[in-house]
Image 1 (cartoon, rainbow, N blue to C red):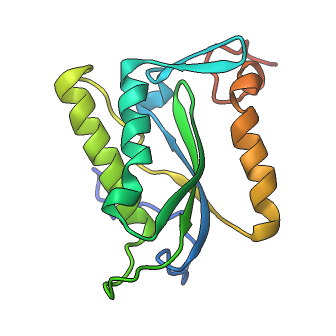
Image 2: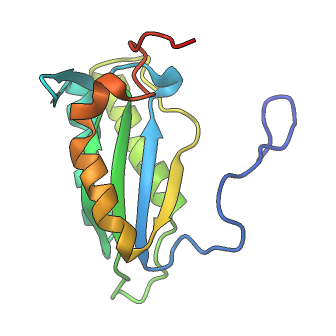
Length: 165
Protein backbone atom coordinates (compact mmCIF):
# COMPACT_ATOMS: atom_id res chain seq x y z
CA UNK A 1 0.00 0.00 0.00
CA UNK A 2 1.34 3.42 -0.88
CA UNK A 3 1.26 6.52 1.28
CA UNK A 4 0.32 10.00 0.08
CA UNK A 5 3.81 10.66 -1.29
CA UNK A 6 3.87 7.36 -3.18
CA UNK A 7 6.15 5.64 -0.65
CA UNK A 8 5.42 2.03 0.17
CA UNK A 9 4.18 1.52 3.73
CA UNK A 10 5.93 -1.35 5.47
CA UNK A 11 3.50 -4.03 6.64
CA UNK A 12 3.65 -4.98 10.30
CA UNK A 13 1.94 -8.33 9.57
CA UNK A 14 3.78 -11.63 9.80
CA UNK A 15 4.95 -12.49 6.29
CA UNK A 16 3.50 -15.75 4.95
CA UNK A 17 0.94 -16.12 7.73
CA UNK A 18 -2.73 -16.57 6.80
CA UNK A 19 -4.72 -14.37 9.18
CA UNK A 20 -7.86 -16.42 8.45
CA UNK A 21 -6.39 -19.46 10.24
CA UNK A 22 -8.17 -20.66 13.35
CA UNK A 23 -6.54 -19.36 16.49
CA UNK A 24 -6.48 -16.40 18.83
CA UNK A 25 -5.29 -12.91 18.04
CA UNK A 26 -4.56 -10.11 20.54
CA UNK A 27 -5.45 -6.87 18.77
CA UNK A 28 -4.98 -3.24 19.81
CA UNK A 29 -6.67 -0.42 17.90
CA UNK A 30 -6.00 3.26 18.73
CA UNK A 31 -8.01 6.37 18.06
CA UNK A 32 -6.61 8.89 15.58
CA UNK A 33 -3.78 10.84 17.24
CA UNK A 34 -4.51 8.68 20.33
CA UNK A 35 -7.11 11.20 21.47
CA UNK A 36 -9.01 10.16 24.60
CA UNK A 37 -12.51 10.04 23.08
CA UNK A 38 -13.78 6.65 24.27
CA UNK A 39 -14.29 7.49 27.94
CA UNK A 40 -12.39 7.99 31.18
CA UNK A 41 -10.87 5.82 33.85
CA UNK A 42 -12.46 6.62 37.21
CA UNK A 43 -11.19 4.87 40.33
CA UNK A 44 -9.52 2.19 38.23
CA UNK A 45 -12.64 1.44 36.18
CA UNK A 46 -13.47 2.44 32.63
CA UNK A 47 -16.50 4.70 32.17
CA UNK A 48 -17.44 4.77 28.49
CA UNK A 49 -18.44 7.93 26.66
CA UNK A 50 -21.22 7.69 24.05
CA UNK A 51 -18.44 7.20 21.48
CA UNK A 52 -16.94 4.40 23.57
CA UNK A 53 -20.35 2.75 23.87
CA UNK A 54 -20.72 2.69 20.08
CA UNK A 55 -17.23 1.22 19.73
CA UNK A 56 -17.92 -1.51 22.30
CA UNK A 57 -21.36 -2.37 20.90
CA UNK A 58 -19.89 -2.75 17.41
CA UNK A 59 -17.08 -4.91 18.73
CA UNK A 60 -19.40 -7.21 20.67
CA UNK A 61 -21.61 -7.53 17.59
CA UNK A 62 -18.84 -8.76 15.27
CA UNK A 63 -19.63 -12.49 15.78
CA UNK A 64 -23.12 -11.88 14.35
CA UNK A 65 -21.52 -10.66 11.12
CA UNK A 66 -18.66 -13.17 11.14
CA UNK A 67 -19.81 -16.66 12.23
CA UNK A 68 -16.96 -18.62 13.78
CA UNK A 69 -15.56 -15.50 15.44
CA UNK A 70 -15.63 -15.16 19.22
CA UNK A 71 -14.81 -12.10 21.29
CA UNK A 72 -12.77 -13.83 23.99
CA UNK A 73 -11.91 -10.77 26.08
CA UNK A 74 -11.84 -7.02 25.54
CA UNK A 75 -11.54 -3.61 27.12
CA UNK A 76 -12.28 -0.18 25.68
CA UNK A 77 -9.80 2.32 27.11
CA UNK A 78 -9.86 6.15 26.73
CA UNK A 79 -7.88 6.10 23.47
CA UNK A 80 -7.49 2.46 22.48
CA UNK A 81 -9.19 -0.92 22.49
CA UNK A 82 -7.66 -4.28 23.40
CA UNK A 83 -9.41 -7.44 22.25
CA UNK A 84 -8.70 -11.12 21.93
CA UNK A 85 -10.44 -12.46 18.83
CA UNK A 86 -10.78 -16.22 18.57
CA UNK A 87 -11.38 -17.81 15.15
CA UNK A 88 -13.13 -21.15 15.51
CA UNK A 89 -13.73 -21.88 11.84
CA UNK A 90 -16.77 -21.49 9.63
CA UNK A 91 -19.40 -24.19 9.09
CA UNK A 92 -20.96 -22.41 6.13
CA UNK A 93 -18.40 -23.69 3.64
CA UNK A 94 -17.41 -20.11 2.83
CA UNK A 95 -13.76 -19.20 3.30
CA UNK A 96 -13.23 -17.60 6.70
CA UNK A 97 -12.59 -13.85 6.74
CA UNK A 98 -9.09 -12.59 7.37
CA UNK A 99 -8.33 -10.65 10.54
CA UNK A 100 -7.76 -7.46 8.53
CA UNK A 101 -11.22 -7.64 6.95
CA UNK A 102 -12.85 -8.02 10.36
CA UNK A 103 -10.95 -5.10 11.89
CA UNK A 104 -11.59 -2.94 8.79
CA UNK A 105 -15.34 -3.63 8.93
CA UNK A 106 -15.55 -2.85 12.66
CA UNK A 107 -13.49 0.34 12.37
CA UNK A 108 -15.46 1.58 9.33
CA UNK A 109 -18.89 0.80 10.78
CA UNK A 110 -18.13 2.31 14.20
CA UNK A 111 -16.50 5.38 12.64
CA UNK A 112 -19.49 5.98 10.35
CA UNK A 113 -22.00 5.65 13.21
CA UNK A 114 -19.96 7.88 15.53
CA UNK A 115 -19.50 10.55 12.86
CA UNK A 116 -23.21 10.64 12.07
CA UNK A 117 -24.43 10.66 15.69
CA UNK A 118 -21.85 11.83 18.23
CA UNK A 119 -18.63 13.28 16.83
CA UNK A 120 -18.27 14.30 13.17
CA UNK A 121 -14.46 14.40 13.52
CA UNK A 122 -13.91 10.93 15.03
CA UNK A 123 -11.36 8.66 13.45
CA UNK A 124 -9.20 5.62 14.06
CA UNK A 125 -5.45 5.36 13.69
CA UNK A 126 -4.69 3.97 10.25
CA UNK A 127 -3.38 0.56 11.29
CA UNK A 128 -3.73 -1.78 14.25
CA UNK A 129 -1.42 -3.98 16.24
CA UNK A 130 -1.90 -7.72 16.47
CA UNK A 131 -0.16 -10.65 18.02
CA UNK A 132 -0.90 -14.30 17.38
CA UNK A 133 -1.60 -15.90 20.77
CA UNK A 134 -0.52 -19.33 21.81
CA UNK A 135 -2.71 -21.10 24.36
CA UNK A 136 -0.10 -20.61 27.08
CA UNK A 137 -0.17 -16.81 26.51
CA UNK A 138 -3.95 -16.39 26.57
CA UNK A 139 -4.47 -16.28 30.36
CA UNK A 140 -1.71 -13.69 30.82
CA UNK A 141 -3.19 -11.48 28.07
CA UNK A 142 -6.73 -11.86 29.47
CA UNK A 143 -5.41 -10.71 32.86
CA UNK A 144 -3.62 -7.78 31.20
CA UNK A 145 -6.87 -6.75 29.48
CA UNK A 146 -8.90 -7.07 32.68
CA UNK A 147 -6.36 -5.05 34.70
CA UNK A 148 -5.74 -2.40 32.02
CA UNK A 149 -8.11 0.26 33.46
CA UNK A 150 -6.54 -0.06 36.93
CA UNK A 151 -3.11 0.48 35.33
CA UNK A 152 -4.12 3.57 33.29
CA UNK A 153 -2.09 5.92 35.48
CA UNK A 154 1.04 3.97 34.40
CA UNK A 155 0.01 3.22 30.78
CA UNK A 156 2.30 4.61 28.07
CA UNK A 157 -0.84 5.26 25.96
CA UNK A 158 -2.07 7.73 28.62
CA UNK A 159 -1.34 11.22 27.27
CA UNK A 160 -1.81 12.72 30.75
CA UNK A 161 1.26 10.98 32.18
CA UNK A 162 3.99 13.42 33.11
CA UNK A 163 6.85 13.20 30.63
CA UNK A 164 9.85 11.37 31.96
CA UNK A 165 13.39 12.56 31.33
